[in-house]
Image 1 (tube, chains in turn purple, orange):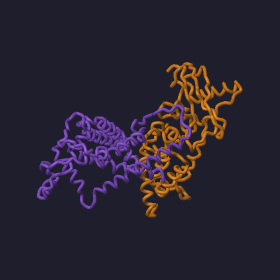
Image 2: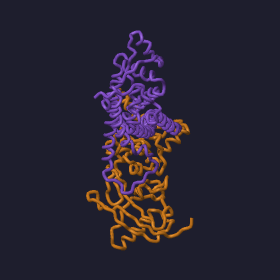
Image 3: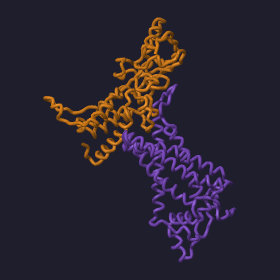
Image 4: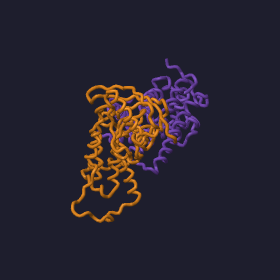
Length: 248
Length: 258
């Protein structure tokens, strides 16, 4: 594959992943509303028609794998392109973010694996699977409560309490890991988003500065949105509504 | 600035030829005028070495007025030294202080093997040029100079790209040893103009392939090349080449390359 082909793959898979991250972050912010909001939202996502949930999951997995495999190819090829290193090497203007993409990327991969085990598969704390609560019909914007009420099935998985327990002071190190990872994501996106436009050739001297500002703003926005939850957990702003029952 | 004499200690890469390993040697040069250029200081050191019956240091140089792109050394980790927008021959000793230690290395990258001391073989850049750095011209009488209207903006932009002197500093400074800035300048200067239009797609495809084939690294948009370029060639030409190559690849896929 040509060097530019790899650029396009990095940019396009990165674009899909950034889009997912932004949507995910906005969805998360429902944690600051009544518990019904996030619980109905989660129920709705879990019950998407036509197996859409798995379509999204497979597309995201494909993007992560493509992004990762291409990144590994880039690192190996670039390493080989300079067999003898400089004894004195100065940095002229390269940003910290641009020089550390491979490291932030690897840590983010570890984070994604942990995050999926933590809140999706829930095998870090298996007792999360048993958290259930009854909807009160407050977060009715999703109309889940209205549909479930006639069926007398308003008891749903208590995602609100799962997240609240997950980020509780008891597991402070988990919250700290989340916040650090989101900081790295912020750095990764600072270079990544501006790089995306460069790689696809979608910028010129006029738009370069504007797009760099857009990238910085988007990266900080994503960081604040994501990091607010573990931080709220540490500060005790989010409290579980269902107690955790030890399963074993 | 008033002229004075300084002495500097140089740590210079010495290597007999491409097939033997090299090593650094330390040299002290006294009473270097601050008005002398970096290359003149190197000349001074070489005279000193010849007097001592040692091998002088081999380094590339030609015009010594910043236009040929021949001088190539990496000074304290920066190709052409620490001052922006100049070549090694334009770097003057007034940029250094008395007693400075200066490390001088050859360009480091796989496609540019060290031939001797500070001289590297930069032929892969010629291979990139030969792959598409030309325009087809009809033979016969030259056409009227005003027959092809070109806007001032486009002409300026093309001239900015054409200011690339092909020194290879972009490759030397790039953490990935990528030749994207050089290639994009050469693609861009012609792709922008109506004269380069007929070969636009093939030029982008062939020059990128020649670049990849030579074993340069991949560009990761870090931008060190732009900062080190003695002619200030902009990263925007890389963006333009990315765009031209994408369009050309799509056309090639559908079998309609122009």
